Length: 289
Image (cartoon, rainbow, N blue to C red; front, side, top):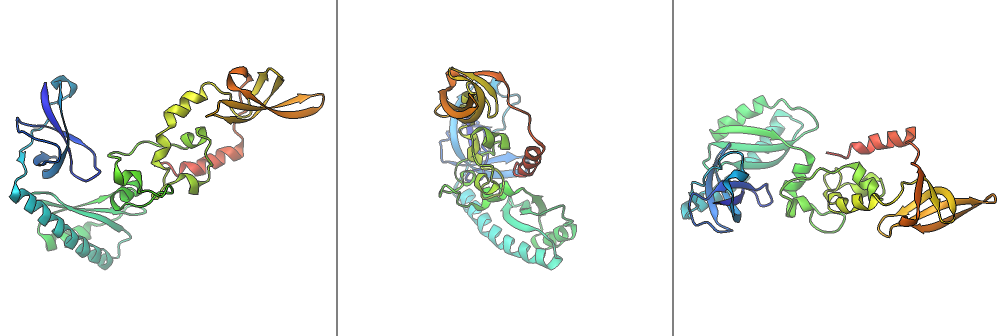
């Protein structure tokens, strides 16, 4: 067994695992580690013991537990980032670039300065990089990020009235699709199922597994079914209550009746999608990330 730590480099960022190198590390400690970006300062968010075979390749070891000077340097970098952000915004205006600067970050060793931005399309920022390199005298990297990443960094309030999940506790984004909204019986109005980022709300994923299980025991809307009162077509389904509402014809009279899902048998599956439904789905697909 080997002792490892989970480290975050941002408050709600992805967790990366490192070997403790026999250091006595506890949750909340600041540590110095080497990453693909260079030497970084991170915070320990979890500790555990694992079987070495659980990882495909050996984990990198932490360099040291952060000392007083390391913490001072980290805080100094944070102050410099704010100054660099303001300077970069001025340079973007000077070069007339259609881009929105979201965040600025120094690596711990100061060997690289990263600028995160959003833009509608590709941006030719070569002249901007040269300009910034002349000012900061360090390696400059500009990274274009998506709208979901922007919301995670900036933060916002969701339609639930609480801080959006990605900025509070979601370390990584989960795949979300229009199919989930449909299976959960939600309105397909884009304004009601999209979050602050303009993409589908992450919370659609939370209960999806339960809905998928419930869907196995009920017929689809439009299906031809057999019920204790005769055959008919499904008009509506209440997944949570496991109720099926069927329109039944008797003596040229149509009635809508409610049945338990277990008492309904499928004769023929629901009809295929119409052209208008397909077009509508294509429009809604743009909400997927």
